[in-house]
Image (cartoon, rainbow, N blue to C red):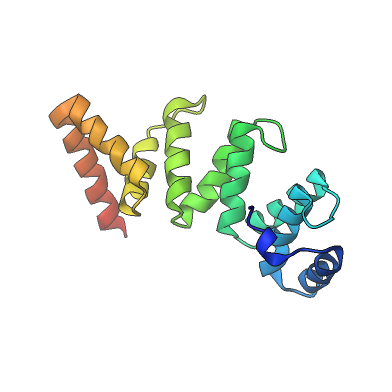
Length: 165
């Protein structure tokens, strides 16, 4: 079951959401986007329109879920072509909003992707501090494999984050 089956989306409900969104209810923007993307409840899938609404939710409404999902879509080429730069951009938006999974995903792209950056450690540590277990596991493995230098580097980064917040 995807996130939208619980809403029992019908074409009538979608039309109502679109009108309410036009009237200023921006909380519906990402729901509309995903409804078009997935084509649930008898609604014809319309990927370009779905992505347009999801992008609007991410950029104009600062919707963290939309930011994260677009990061995933562009990273993996789901519903669109792969675009690492766009993926990094959307993940960065969500990561700046303290979304731990986005922080981890961003860290991995900055570490291993074509846009390598030393900021990967900052985002990995932020993800760890926000309770994302994969980030914690990665840092623990880094210490286990690289010893004291890795431990001091991570401790220094964690301290810098706590001082800046």
